[in-house]
Length: 210
Image (cartoon, rainbow, N blue to C red):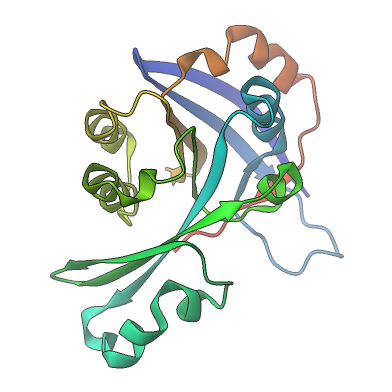
């Protein structure tokens, strides 16, 4: 069983908010493996504030392959075959000296799908073709960094600066703490939310981390 506590909201800039939460895992006989994740209360707040039917929602999955294992087979499989997930609407690959990052964007159809989404990156937008923009692909390359950190949130904000209608979420683990970078709408979270979160027992939302 995972318990979250010591929630923190940091207003990093006019368009960026970063959430942190500590967690403690108490072994349960019914749980064989521990899965990293974010508190479900963050999901509840996001869904409540964004509303339904206003934005299109998408998830971004990515998978890192070391340079020694990159070949025609991995290029053929792309993210869908490497992660064994349904094919989405857009795919791309980022090459680095150490290997390749295979990335894919899929539609999140409803609130249940959002709650069950295990991708570390989610974004909401009023445009259906945002993923086709060159600047957005640059944002994906930054967001898919394996060593993503708080400083990368500012880089993402600068890249997404001209996309006023986007809300971009990036989950990661920062020195053992669960972290969430929110770019685009800093009014989503308030100081009152901290009291609500601390007073509630939040379930874990399992996340997939490469």
